[in-house]
Amino acid sequence: MPDENPKIEFPTLIWQEEPVIPAKPMFNAPPTLAQNLDIVRTHHPRIGSTLDAIWGYSECEDYLRKLVNEAGDPAGKSREGFSPDVFQAILTLAEHHKITKN
View: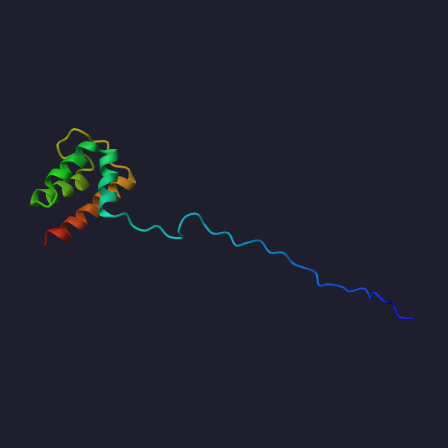
């Protein structure tokens, strides 16, 4: 007589790990104008205050140019140079000022 309870074999389950979603985006968006100003203010408060006071005036473009060319405060009070992130923020601010000024 045939077996009343035939043995059934189930397919082997293969578990895959869930995909890992990175905590940060895959690319870094460029900092906004406010973020660039904050970078400068954080590392060089006096320069940040000066930019706040002269932003939008023709003197600002000259000031930013001197910051880049002299790698320090145009007033001669600090000649330590800038960290790469501050230098990039100043370059971005200089470019943005040219755009908004016109």
